[in-house]
Length: 232
Image 1 (cartoon, rainbow, N blue to C red):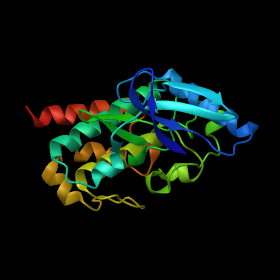
Image 2: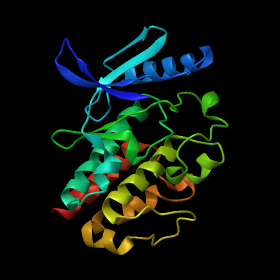
Image 3: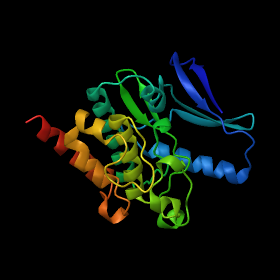
Image 4: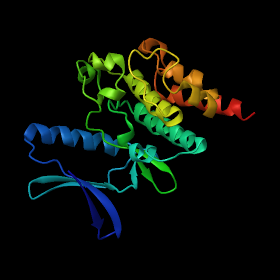
């Protein structure tokens, strides 16, 4: 459960995430999630404010945003705003990857919009940090999962694919489905709004993971280069 609350010390609204009806093993998973979140320090990653056990419940406090990116997508969005959000999606995920973490659940619901159109990546409950943990893991949100993730083989390249779907939806207004043959639904709109990034997105959304960018940092650099060429 997630509640809106008031931090009486700072005088700010916060989000309280409280796992309910958890056993000792589940508490271990949540603690691992919190430790992963605590390792990350980036403007596009949701920071952990505090965590404690209160009356037998694990209570985690996070800054409170305005809405999820998924909710924001339901309203009209200019191309410039969509591109700004896209860049922040990649910046936050690149920081996660640089810290050796595979998020495993990249989707619009897990990006929180803050004032000033700041986007922050949240929810590391499914994140993995080692090859042992990644093997056989098929947890995630089906609509945004890479083909190999469905088969239980997630990696940073899988996060690249999921981020590519989020950005494609931001710019094209459509969420492609398997078998992901180009041109994808919404391609005409993508070419009208941001043709310079079409080739970059096509590589990020390659069904074969070996043909994708190796991680979000590589994806972000290619995206930035394409945007720079468009403004020359």
